[in-house]
Amino acid sequence: MTEPLRLVVFDVDGTLVDSQASIVDAMTASFSACGVPVPERSAILSIVGLSLSVAIARLAPDQPAAMQHKLVENYKQAYHAQRLEQGAAGSPLFPGAIDVIKNLHAVPEILLGVATGKSQRGLDALFELHGLDTYFVTRQVADHHPSKPHPSMISAALGETGVEAQHCAMIGDTSFDMEMAQAARVAGIGVSWGYHDRPALRQAARVIDTFDQLPGALADIWGKEI
Image (cartoon, rainbow, N blue to C red; front, side, top):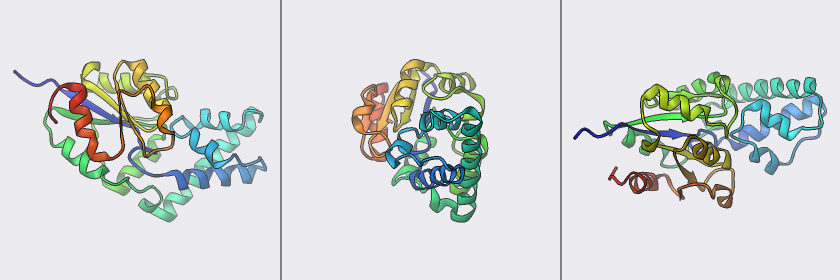
């Protein structure tokens, strides 16, 4: 019997790459340039994964829409400048990420995708820096979807690949990722090394502590050795 296609969808910031320093620095630069009080580091990290406009609205809820828009644009400029200056060093891959990506990609029935609050430009630049272009067949970004935890990104990934929901898993570090997975009726696997504490991942089917635990978690969920 032919094995069904399976889809593993990864969040990016806090799951595949450790971009916290770049995000905090760019957010600090944006708020400072606008003369708006800079949020605490913990507050900034708490919104990682949301689409940028939604994140800014949560960080500066008392600011008028025009100022929130300016904060968004300043953040984009600051983050882009950092990427040009720092390259891949500004958002390094987490330990073990590339090995697991390559190993899963080598399994014929497994497809890989991403669902991220990044823009298309930001994701493309990151993938180019890390040489990840060849691995992911579906890439869902903030430009084309409502912010997480809306299930739109996963629904689109399932539609593009033809994979059924029961054969899909969402890998992420935040409550937004796990809530999105639940809304899309796919399995959520939380990672403990990201930007939300482990208790925030309570809706996950599994929580892993290192990348090399991911194949085993997928095997448990799907009842099939990976």
